[in-house]
Length: 231
View 1: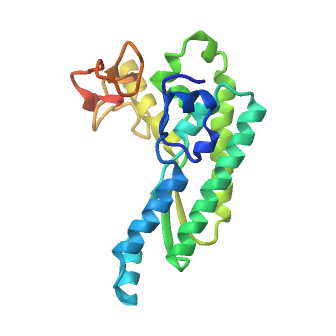
View 2: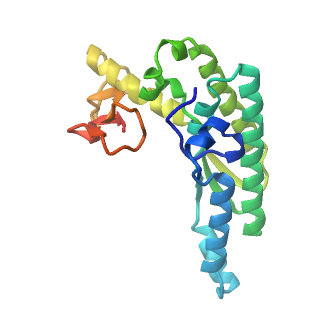
């Protein structure tokens, strides 16, 4: 899937030529963001003694959340090519986590690493029309592959502690909660109550644009954005 959508990815080298032509200055990828964080942290701790640095490190949790745009960028590829791209991206993620741990200087680094959501849940995916919907099965498979590889690598990582957040399960629960509520069904686990925040729409994007750009002066925002699952 290609076109007008783009966001921060693990490695800008994975972006297609067409996207690079549209966006002359891609957003900072994971490599750039880690480099910037290390530089800022180095400056912030300059002059601190070991005790102060240790206290700062003990109170720091690094959140790494990538995958949505990486998966979006491979939707038009064959499953084989997409899976190879996933392998390269996961390798970069783990290399960057190793770099963070090396800079940290201990095995006390604490990281929250989010698994990727299934992009077929997103309103923008449905907006692509029938040609992309036919790729639904492969899109789900590649998201599962991403999360499986990320989970396996995280479990084997020994340079700190990684807490995995299952974004996809969270998102699916939010959608299912509203669907059950609309059908008048409540499950034993509480799904179906649609409480806090009490979704009114779990299918459409709050911000609509005839051009379907992520940021556009012609965008129209919904009246109650806090009740829309998708921005």
